Amino acid sequence: MKVPMLDLSEQYQDLKPRVLEVLDEVMSSSRFILGDNVKKLEEDVAKYSSVDYGIGCGNGSDAIHIALQALEVGPGDEVITTPFTFFATGGAIARAGAKPVFVDIDPITFNIDPNKIEEAITEKTKAIIPVHLYGQMADMEEISKIANKHNLGVVEDAAQAIGAKQNGKSVGELGSAATYSFFPTKNLGAYGDGGMIVTNHEDLAEKCRVIRVHGSKPKYYHHVLGYNSRLDELQAAVLNVKFPHLDKWSELRREKADNYSRMLNEQLEGFVQTPVEKDGNYHVFHQYTIRVERRDELQQYLKEQGVASMIYYPLPLHVQPVFAELGYKKGDFPISDQAAEEALSLPMFPELKIEQQEYVVSKIVEFFKK
Ligand SMILES: *Cc1c(COP(=O)(O)O)cnc(C)c1O
Image 1 (cartoon, rainbow, N blue to C red):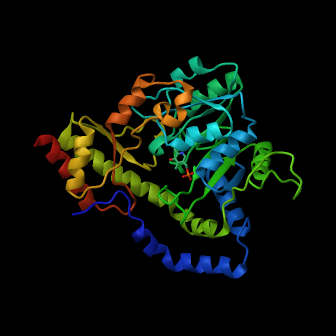
Image 2: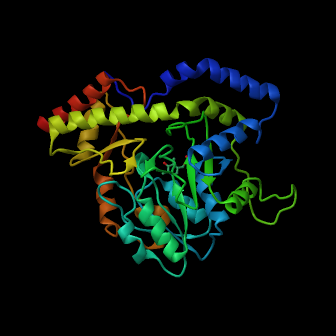
Image 3: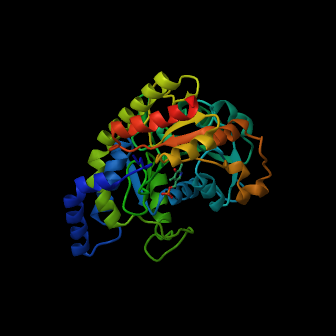
């Protein structure tokens, strides 16, 4: 048996007739940029996030960058975030001209540890970017308390967490803004790049809108330095077809996660740390990530047996060569360093079959009991 990390083909076969229809509608209309499809998706995704405004943009990385710029984060400012994330989080801070300041993670959730945030705040701190890693929200209540106390902006990097909730609150409700990615492998994936900012603040929304069109307002008059980062109509049309299915897909992901955890805990207690959903959280399992010792050996073994797996992420941001000038070194964030050595993400997508999951688990058991 072969088990891929992700297989989008079944989903496409289900949606194909409607997808081809809407693509044809866009091409026949000749309206490709910022038309009705983008508008509809912005409204739907904002409502889904329990906020008033959605601003579609080119990708999830630009969404973070634009939100920071709208919060007037720039050169001389510091932005606090987690080192245990995809590069784009730190990249967006640096591209905005600010300095990323890292804070270690909670070993259970892999998300930024709110207890360590305050000691990293300086006079230059302008914002915090919690990342809702693997589909589970960071502790937003604590983070917003700290942000309010110190008058800081909060941009939730929710690239992996559309649909996640915490004590009844959606992604985007407590932060100044939240950002989504519609990269094809994300829980709501386009057929190319795409992203969105959602926010409840009208002034922030308006600034983001202007920044994504070259800082142009009115057209051809430029008071701020923007760039070209828009969600296009073809991608938005595809996403409008997919969006109504999102909650069902999240439920299916949660079901797969339950299956994995039940089997792994029954058969391998003590060898594998399965993901923990914190009380009050609704985890959408963008990734199903276990912690194990001898992780690299296990990954190699699984590969030989036809089971794909991924390491998210092998090198935390504080030790990325591009951030060397920040002066961090290995050991500065020991919990992130350890997570980078132990985390392994298993195949996860809504259409994953129970037989495939059983096979994956049997191979992990074989590795540890051999
Ligand atoms: C995917 C991702 C991004 C970037 O999104 P793109 O659409 O690929 O630019 C940012 N942050 C996190 C945590 C991600 O997983």
